[in-house]
Length: 410
Image 1 (cartoon, rainbow, N blue to C red):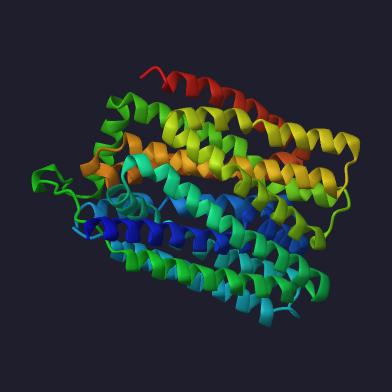
Image 2: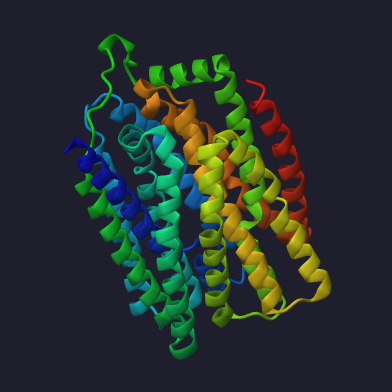
């Protein structure tokens, strides 16, 4: 009976992740949102902001959520607030695009970015309870497999979303098409939240009251102390900062495609290629993570991170068309899937069972400033040239490879 319960929980958690993956594809910051913001504003800085605020909003709330979650026995209520809250925010964006189709571009873009910022910060409430609940519910040797199933199912949904986006952009006014896709994303996120909540929450590992920080300031000081004392935690944070620097280029690949004549209708194709890349790489990342370890997975993905910025510079030099960018986004999809599986798996691995919410909160809060990297990318594109963003990403990837080798030394 207990085994059946564990299997049910495994598949509900994987299904919740798959539904969210499909929903997040509908609002993908590297393709859908970047293309929409660029269409409305023509500004590289605005495109960079949309990507940066998504990452910043994901990371910043985690210090507060981690502190509060560590003082309660149940973390599921935190998850429910964040998961259903972000679905509502996405639905509101869909309504804005539907009803605001006749608005001037600037007010519409400002309203869009305001709601997108709200979505980003509500999403950040989810991370700590999700990591803790999954860490307790799924044994270490099955986590990479669960994540791989999550991304496999999510990839299938994302392919359908990409096909619908392509069809909508070909047959509807652009803003109406985007409104439809955001509405679909909101629906999938509601399904995701409902599946995860229905999976239930295993009993938390008890933490003695004397081991809990008295207030938020003490909780932060404890995190800084952990950062000084825990070498793997510290190196992994540096590794994550460098990873963020490589990802500063992420929203600008679609901008580069637009500069080479690819329009909104091609966004669906690029999203589909990105989704197929994630889907095809799932078995590879899952096997590497479970059989050779989460660190090895991170190290391999660090090497793969160099591929997209190198390839986009080659495509620009060759004045490539849609086929070249489909290959590029296929590689981006595979890379980002490996980044996510490796990041979640290794953070769970280095976090003590009784301190997992605290470790997640500290790590993501200390990594938060790196989320501003796409804003730096927007500034580089505006002041120098968009190619400078990709060159910086290549050097950051090389530095991350070096830090990844140090991580393996203990």
